Image (cartoon, rainbow, N blue to C red; front, side, top):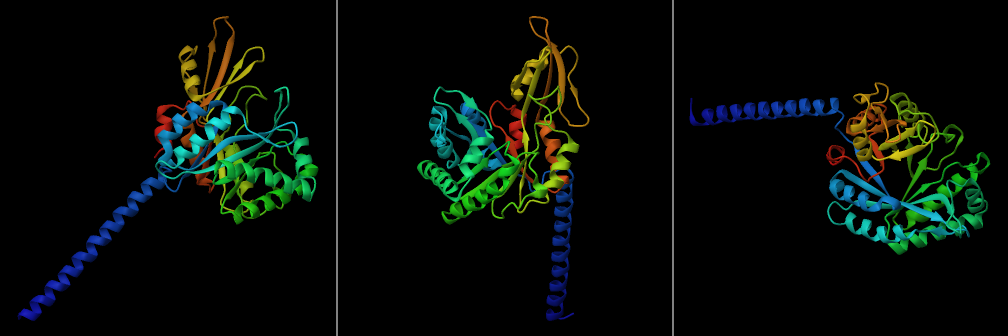
Length: 353
């Protein structure tokens, strides 16, 4: 074999080894990817809310999971007795800090959440006021005034976008509501800002012409709660049903899950509890806490110091992981978390992955 033949043989051998190496690496990567997909760890995009009444602990949680979030929703802007946006003292204090924290590491996008709660001059509150929506969106003039009011607040605090959380909307208002969504989206889009819209499970999706452009978020919670007997905030059947209904909504959208749970007192009193509060109460459980097969939620019973029986249902990191997996299996990889504040350390660790 001459020198040229030897060089040719070496070149062929090296080429074969090169191909085998990269074929093996690709095969290994595909196997690793398959394992991650089986574990539901691929392509999850997370967003989360911080509420004004619990903003300090919400911020504590946020700072631990900024790398795991694509966006943060600052809840909330309410309305005063004149139908103009109203920010609580807590909101005014919290919002600049949220925006500053969002820019410190991973540049998390921050939305202002506007909700149709109305605060009276005497401090009384009407939650999810449908009559307010009727007034705000009734005419071109009223919608334009409302949009200008929102944009003024967005500009003042330098938000990246807006989230609209209008609930208990009257059936007769949906045409004007959809017009408002489209008009607000166009105004925000022209400013380089985004629009997110929260939908209740009762929203008549099948009958609406929801505009393209906004991102939509389906609330996959409140299956049980302050309005009902004890039970989980969501279960797998509920999640899958809502995900299939969301297939009718334009865009690449979110499914929202709620942390924490509720404490039902024998006799009728119902209190919301955070994950940490529920975990502490579980130490008083009459029997070992159970995990519900249909929802992944934890439930238990305990007696308080007056010998009154309580029933608690809540979500921990396992619950959230299983809900997210159910959402992914239904085709939704974008997940919104209601809400940060007093989450367990393991839950925060999972959310930051």
